[in-house]
Image 1 (cartoon, rainbow, N blue to C red):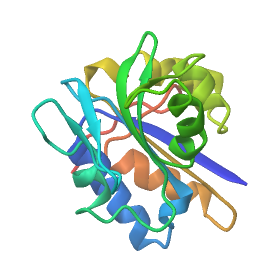
Image 2: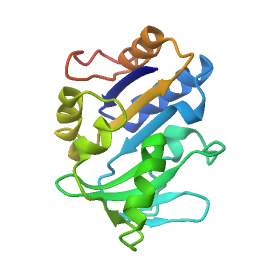
Image 3: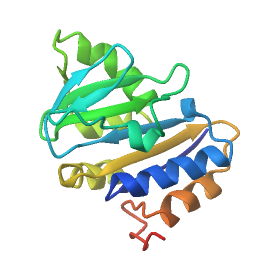
Image 4: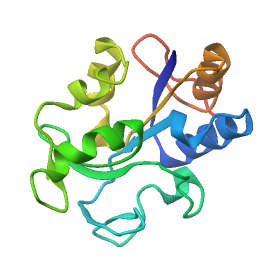
Length: 173
């Protein structure tokens, strides 16, 4: 199974990468997106919209409009040491039951941000790298699935400004 991931310094860079990955045929179910928004994430609607304290949808721009894709898990999470996050995709779908077991609109995940990522194939080095950059507004995008050209997916992530522990940030176009 192919796995590629990167962190982006802005929502706009992540949005470009996700759009291009979709153009290459990557399905929403093969994408996971985790975003830390400057404000406090305060609400999750029945349609899966996660809004911050200023009522801005944290994931809408990155995912393109309001369409989150069929079966795409969406979660608002509070992870100790990282703070409030909005997540979509396989990572969110697996974290949601654990977070919601706490019983709050924003559940506190037991464990760390690194554990959430490594459980989904992100290396320990990349998880450490991402965790240190999330509070600055970073957006993590992962691509995981059979039938995905891993080299091409990584190239798209890096060309659009994504970086990780082994790949320095390139200038996005």
